[in-house]
Length: 77
Image 1 (cartoon, rainbow, N blue to C red):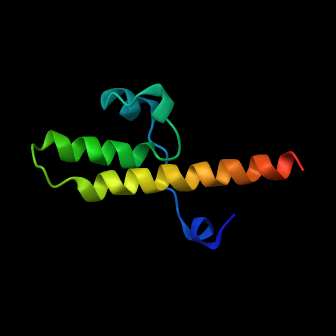
Image 2 (image 1 turned 30 degrees about the horizontal axis):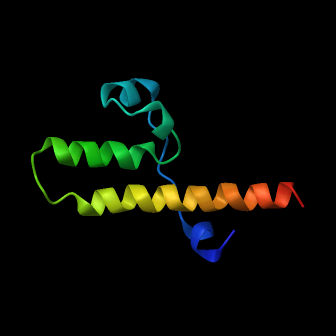
């Protein structure tokens, strides 16, 4: 893992009910789902100023991907 991802703290994983309530797609029901819900809530307000919440979701997804790739790399060595 890189130093950047070690410092990253994932939000608590939402409950199944919360995931269902906000129609989170199954392929996004991971440790970044809370950020996606925040983004959806922002969009629901009808504002166009949601780029920060969207960016946080994609940052989380990127870090999670880097961690998965790193763990796969270690497992295959």
